[in-house]
Length: 164
Image (cartoon, rainbow, N blue to C red; front, side, top):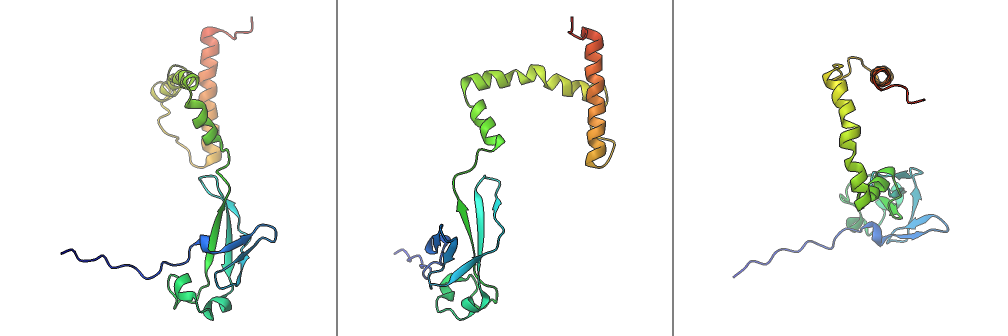
């Protein structure tokens, strides 16, 4: 005979249990109380716009539904809810993935091995730029630009300026 798997008590409220009014920009909890926007809207790495809301401390402390709402009902901090809005935006990374995922994109991008990678190999093997010898973004950028300028000047010296 199998032992039955114990069921959890009713799951906690999820953001879907809260009612959001886009016109008034208000979020209402299952108990009918208003959550206030924290004003910390941001865009997450997946590209979704995230709006944060927080209930007032007094509303959560005196609420009859706090056992279903808060992870730890004895805690003193109020409920916080984050809403993920819209589809991911077209980030440059997403656009590049779409571009590469076509037959023509794969063909063009595969040419990188013959165009760009030898430059990095030359800088590492011939110029000794295996790692930056400086600290700080500004100094590293200057060092990188100097090394790439040297590589470009060598190409001009070897193959000509191409301005015939």
